[in-house]
Length: 215
Length: 215
Image 1 (spheres, helix red, strand yellow):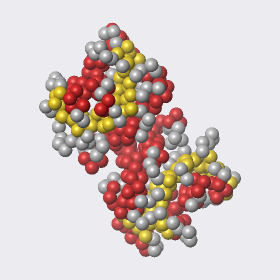
Image 2: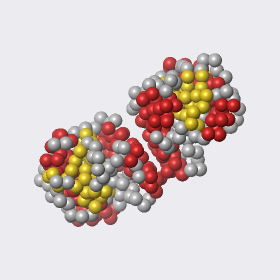
Image 3: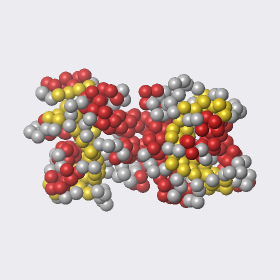
Image 4: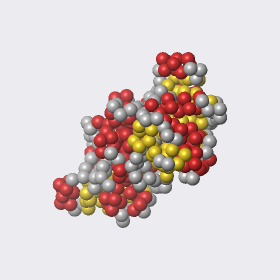
């Protein structure tokens, strides 16, 4: 598959780009916001396109053209406040969903967040973040795309273990290395059992491929 | 019809409550946030319930039970910032949509805003407001409810004229008295031609009933 990674310069996005680039089954196109980010990627031999999630949708459509899948792992980050979160994590995500539809890309994997689907469990201090993720996910579910929504727990910079716990709705809280989130996203791309499904993800005892098959 | 007005203490909401209360075809139940607001309404002989759009959905479900229609005219107002706008104008609206579904209320009229449907025309200074209204409207369209979405232009406190201009997508900008927005909402409730439709509304030359029939 040729995969457009939106948010390629983000902490999870960088792992996804690297893993796709090292994977014989896939080729990667990295979407980034800045010229210098694109130059860095191109130096490594990675196809990179520049588009701004706050800009017009047409640049995202152009980036998605010719791809087989889109991965959305962009986010405004924790320090930017509600306004930016709305414009990137919600409206930027939905522009990307619409762009995939318009470009004829059917497969879409969304990096969401644990509890984004459960209004009652939203952390009061960053409720705006959960509102944005919640409605981005719901708009994806309401789209015509063949989606997978991955909801990771607390994100760690630890090295990945390759072992996870995945379920439609986990009862427990938990955390997971960003590297394993990326591995799960990449493995989901070609795992039919994840089509049109959403699931929670934390560290666990099961190899990612098996966990996705048994979802 | 028995109509639940959500945001009954708002500037448009107050007009809607008054008009429904004076209309022999309808009875009104006003949903407000504060005890003293409910007391004021009850003194005037108006059925009032207390529920908070930022609280649990179940209190909205309870308010909607037994009603034939819900009107959503709530808003966090222009001074509260993006966080509150998200929680009231988007998440509060969608909670109300879900509450109507759960309470078995099929008819839903949404007070939206001119250009909420056109991302390109969002006022930069209050883009968060348009994002919230945009996605509330899209969630309503994706619901199973029999909806009408009214998108008024710039809101005025002038007395209403009863004459408007209504169209699926107006080319011009314009304004409209809040009293006429309320009249349009009330007239829409029982006008079948507005079922499952969204339209723009500004002041004009056509009587509201005729404008809705010819939409």
